[in-house]
Length: 144
Length: 144
DNA sequence: AAAAAAAGTATATTTTTATTTACTAATTTT
DNA sequence: AAAATTAGTAAATAAAAATATACTTTTTTT
Image (cartoon, rainbow over all chains, first blue to last red; front, side, top):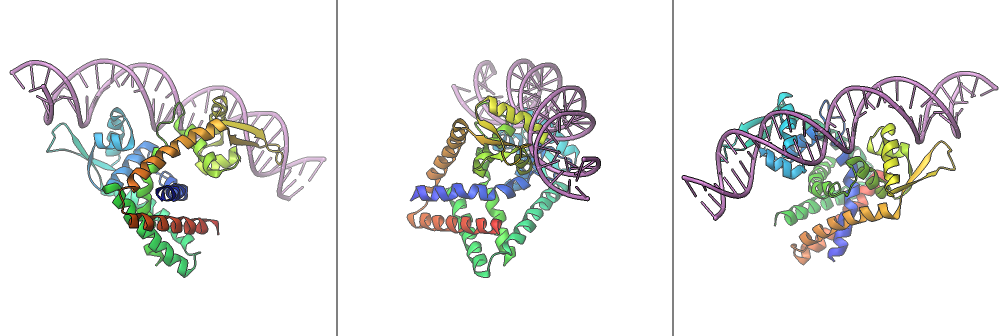
């Protein structure tokens, strides 16, 4: 049983591949890594310190120092001292940073919507339910 | 309706994010781009010429010349002239290249299986069905 | 209180990626 | 048949990413 589920999951990854790589395109003026960091902060929905980002994205902390400095200079993120650990610095997205990510997601959204329109109403209903269920269960799996 | 579906789809992307980024880790001796190319060839399941790869991965063809050359020297891919277009060269994975990608997918597979085991039998059944349905419909959308 | 560890910074160096320009050979278009 | 495109290569350069080393400050461990 688990084997079959895993196979379906593996098949899903390439299906999502295109949308995923769209996230790294058309990033006005940001390098790949800068974009990754902004994207990661957006996904995590909370302020992170450099160590969190370093672990999450598998980037050396020495690299992050400069990446974050440049992102800050560009107005995409802000740094604030962590009151609970005075060694640490909390990085969070500015409205400008949020907006940039939003625009990219909007493009993915629109592309996807255009394709969904090709499905029949019944298929659309099925897809909505299947995606919903998938999301709930995947989330549950990760959390527990 | 479409709006709701798109939202579920957007929520799915971060859920798959982790597995996806695992594809770029632990790549013995290959650079990111080299790994991307190997991964892409694996996903497409057919020989591709440089232009195909260039378009698919958004990499300049000049870059690919060297990337492919190094991959070939490493024994991961082979080049063969395209008999239908003598300007073109078809690149395909060698058994060694295949094996390398397989190992990575196996790791993802095992990680995922471990997590699925936490779900109840009923939830597992639901997940299998939901993933299956999702895959079928996403594939249908893209093809049409 | 001293020692060890952790978060972040700084600097230098090497390796990868990206970009520009220019070229050959084969294919398509006119 | 000539002109324009296209696939791929080549080489030089610039920019970005990765790695190694060393340091300060704060926190945790002993």
